[in-house]
Amino acid sequence: MRDALRSLLEERLGYECVAEANDGYEAVKKVQEFRPDIVMMDVTLPNINGIEATRLIKAEQSDIKVVVLFMHATRGRVQQALEAGASGYLHKHSSLEDLSAALAAVSKGMTYLSPISGSADELSVSKNNGNAVRLTRRELQVLHLIAEGNSTKEMAAILAISEKTVETYRKQIMDKLDIRTVAGLTKYCIREGLTLL
Image (tube, rainbow, N blue to C red; front, side, top):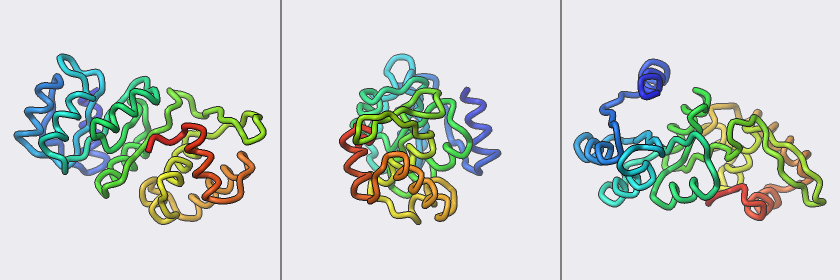
């Protein structure tokens, strides 16, 4: 997986990979030695896991951004990663588009949250009337970003899509949830536990 990730980062996205690590201790040491701008951290590392390694890295070098990679994310585990200092998280099966968006977001000091829906393309959520509706992964990403207070322009930059496309997703979310304001979406997202901030 490391080889594939490195190839994507360097050949497709134009990033320079300065080091790789086999376990959590080595990751902390490599970060101390190379001082990268962004660390891609697997949560299931030997010796110390990626969350604890993130905590150690951020304790010494708070300016370094860490994106934690999960195979199976739960809200609790993602919350632990964010509390350890991670700037965001991605599923290991995320698309190149999601990887690019995550790196762009954290490099600007923002938080990037991949939907906590496992490998599913959609997540069931409840409307105010209790009926269930399904949001796509992209709609859930937009909902997260709305709840974080991002503008349409900021969301477009983070997700690498046009502002018009962001507006379309927002309208779809509002229609599905029967909520008509951004403030209402934000309150809904927090109430339902769909945001981690």
